[in-house]
Image 1 (cartoon, rainbow, N blue to C red):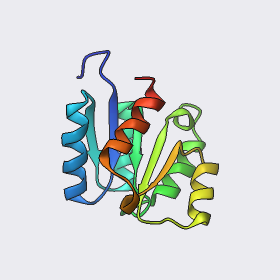
Image 2: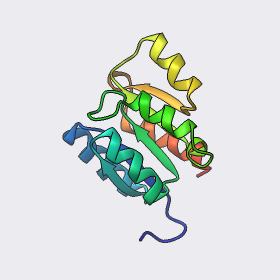
Image 3: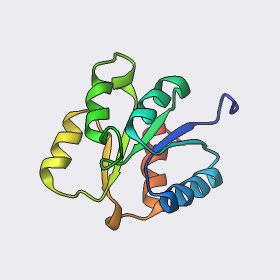
Image 4: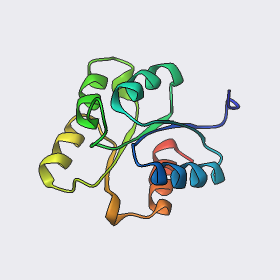
Length: 127
């Protein structure tokens, strides 16, 4: 169990290389990190881990990131969790839908650097 002052981040992503890059970078910034590689397991982990923030891909196995966001909106606690969507899907329809479903931010994987992601997470968590 992480110390009480350590922020918990859940990464829901199926790209193993990207997961390891994020895990290493988040550790440098003193985040406690857990990972799920599919939407169903990620949804369950949100409620067991109680993360401070979720980094979510849209195109993941078993339950898409959009469907996961929809399910979170059905839960009073679940809809309060900040979610940063990190995906390859950069079309405006996806962006609008994600933001409508409570996404905090939407990043297209090819357009961002890990430093940008850390900055957005720190800002959202008040660090």
